[in-house]
Length: 422
Figure 1 (tube, rainbow, N blue to C red):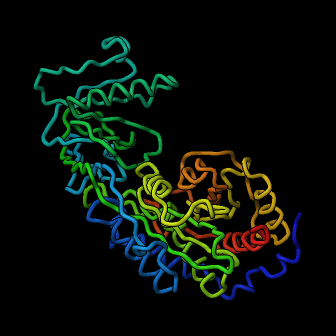
Figure 2 (figure 1 turned 90 degrees about the vertical axis):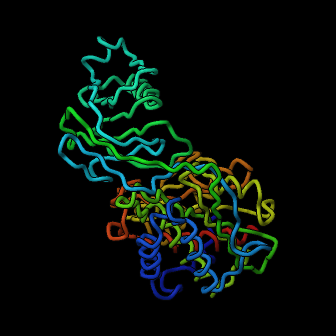
Figure 3 (figure 1 turned 180 degrees about the vertical axis):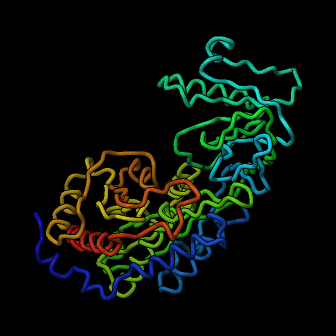
């Protein structure tokens, strides 16, 4: 049942001044050149984790484990710390804008003759499968261009063929779709260069300079803080990943404002509030690294928790909070219907957001391993005017933080209501 007496204590005015400007400062700092896109080039992730730990300490949030704020662990990662260059005949392309290097790429340097692969010759000349000349030492690059062809699932098969060839030769993949970077966990022998079709001029010759650095055991760390509540043995967890995609060479940085400096800013803003307003329950703030590498940070944490997970009543994972002008989506809303309906009722009563949308379970953010362990969890992301994602344009300047205060108020109100059940 909806509890009006709880809601009466919650509202923007009761929390003092808006936190959005503080959040904007946090987001801008994390997106600055200092942190190299918070990836695995030049220890960008480590520098970001130190900033978050220092901010928690400054706010007055305790360390979340017996060993301090940090929890170290390792995983494999493929990186590109060195200068990269791609030239089509005499046309030099701009990294991040005209092309992306596949994160699974290996190394190649020099001039290569182009072997064009397209919808005309792939199924005729090659019989639907390009077989690389394994023993032949040709200086060629295979250029796959299927922008005029929409074969559905077959295109995925063609792309798998391109990856097979990259074990023996460099590959170009021409695309007219949005290009999104990611984190590679292994590497091929040669690079795959994904070029935007608007920049591709069907060259006869390509100059490539790509050198990867594969790190089989990269050590990174999560950041954990806590605020003791009146009921010390009952926990709520707020989580957000602070890592992003880092650098693709020295000139292309992926700042990751919307994904997910905005979520980190939300957690720190909430931490500031609960330091000054002691909660009924103990709150843990978990800032995970390795999310972009496959949820590695949260996976490790759930397997090696720094506090007793059986005491956790709910996990609220904030990932992509750059602009909620159209509302928010709650992943696992179809699973935890009572909690979803409570948030929806609070939102309607307080007239905060245009919409609170329900979505089913997913495995695409740090709520997942908590949820798989049987802990009630929501993954909350914003819907609005910010569409930049996994590209160089996901900057602080391009991220509005629209309805940030309203989302924060909704979360605080939900915890106040939920606190009566603990």
